[in-house]
Every structure is written in C-alpha cells, then in structure tokens.
Length: 54
Image 1 (cartoon, rainbow, N blue to C red):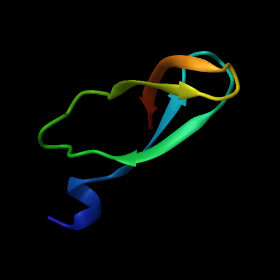
Image 2: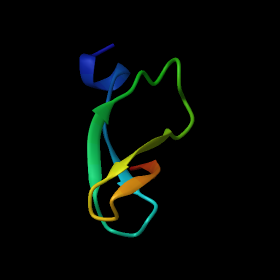
Image 3: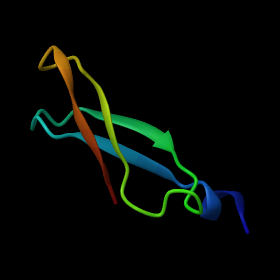
C-alpha cells in the first residue's frame, strides 16, 4: 500500500460552527470510522468536538 492510502491526511472541522479546522493523519486500518476529537477552538475560546470531514 502507498503511504497516502494507509494514513490519509484529513481535516477535523469544529462542531461549534466557526469553520476552524485542524489537519492530522489517521491510520485507516485501525480506525475505519470517522474520527471525533475534543480539541480547543480559539474562535469560541473553549474545547469542542471536532469531526472528520471528507
């Protein structure tokens, strides 16, 4: 498998509706579902859920 196939680059978009994003990689073999992480959104000024978008 190519490097980009196994660990694709993905965007995590804020659920607060601010449009703020984080960029990360994930292992598609270990985590086939969409990723949800609780991270800091500087626009809102607090921690919110960030969901994977494709």
